[in-house]
Image 1 (cartoon, rainbow, N blue to C red):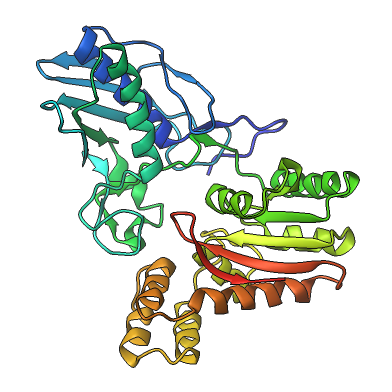
Image 2 (image 1 turned 60 degrees about the vertical axis):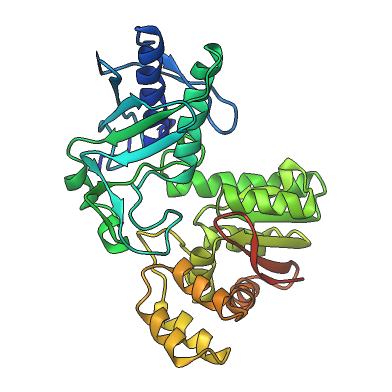
Length: 361
């Protein structure tokens, strides 16, 4: 891990943003004969950063462009990795297809947001690539029809320092990112931001706030309650830091919202929900299924499951309200940390942003 720099932390760009920019440059070269350098892309929240190419080449119906990932001041294992995109034109109507090149993993187990056999290029980066190529294609009156192969030289070695092997992603890293931006990891800075968010809520008379673990749960809460921006607290993994501050400076009502894996950790008593500092307790989830009278085969499958979301899927297939049970337990853990002045509800959201469990006020 790199030593934490002093002063304000510099943000960076995700592997997904770099892959989208490299893909756009290569695709543009195929249509125009020229690589845009720097190349500009649109991120999911509207920002339009530019990326300088580290490599580019064009041969026949294929073009290659590469970008060196800059993770800013985040201690990211992929900082300074070379993200390479090879784009090959396909017949009209083919759409986009994705392949894993050197150093990019392939999914071998269920429970992830990608099907088994798919390259580990996550859904949001795929959308970013589609949007980036679409901008170029539209200028030429076309639809983007291309095969995208993403490579990360040395990615197989980098993946050894991630959870990919445990998750059944083999051969390399994943191409990740939900916003395109890497916010430097800093516990103290993030918790300070949470405290400031709570302070703003109180100062503006907010009576109902939502503490969300990520952008998917945030979107779900916004859809559910139409809360103002100042009422949304970016809790991230810091459930403990959020709840301890609320104990001192309460808000009347708080919705805790997150994915099944993170809220199952909270249900088990973990207050730091980061994957590197707490783990999903499969035995706890299997026991919860037992309380719901799940078949023995379902309970056994849960104990062998690769991810928490795979366990949730098992429960949903059996029409078992596991999400509600875990939400109730997460709510109880939160209430035990507070002083009784804040009402709590817990909401579990699946990867598609749908409600998967709820313990209401």
